[in-house]
Length: 251
Image (tube, rainbow, N blue to C red):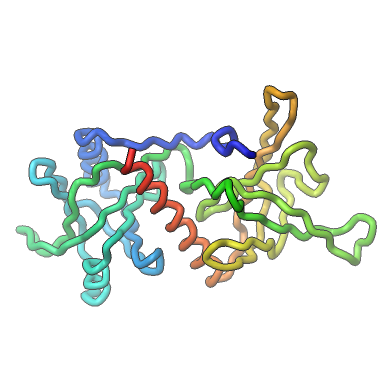
């Protein structure tokens, strides 16, 4: 069995301290950071900003959108994920959102989250894919023995983000897997549906195990996706993020 914790160097940090959570949210307000709101299984999204944090009243206020129909769907949603995607990645979930009237006008209101996830030094938030029934990625490459025929290479995914995927290879690497190599229309069967993005190898990390065995951690970047594939990948990342937040909340 592959130990995924050995493969990722993400600096994921789950914050539970209420005072620290309020400080992080206040910093978002101070820096006017753009916050992405995602709900309806990732099919609905909008941008907002934190405009006030009131720890004494257990309230966080955000800008309200101008589309009343969209606002109603948001308010009727029973699970919303909030995330800051640039710089230090910050993410948290709320079971409900309400609309309130402040001195300066309407605003969205949520309770101060009991926990949030903060991830440093990553452009995209990477989430581990399942160890049981792992996601496979089929890469098509030119067959050296027959240039007119393509061959397939199967990789096991260990994580995924909106920017790409991570895979692991036990033992020696296939010659086709080199940094900078690009592969069109790679096949991945996600729980939300099949996708076929184009991928480029961005980095390869060689890891020597105590047993003497060698494995390679491969980072691949999405370079081309259809609009349908983008929606499926976003929905899958949303589902994994929701599961991670539930686990963090239960600890």
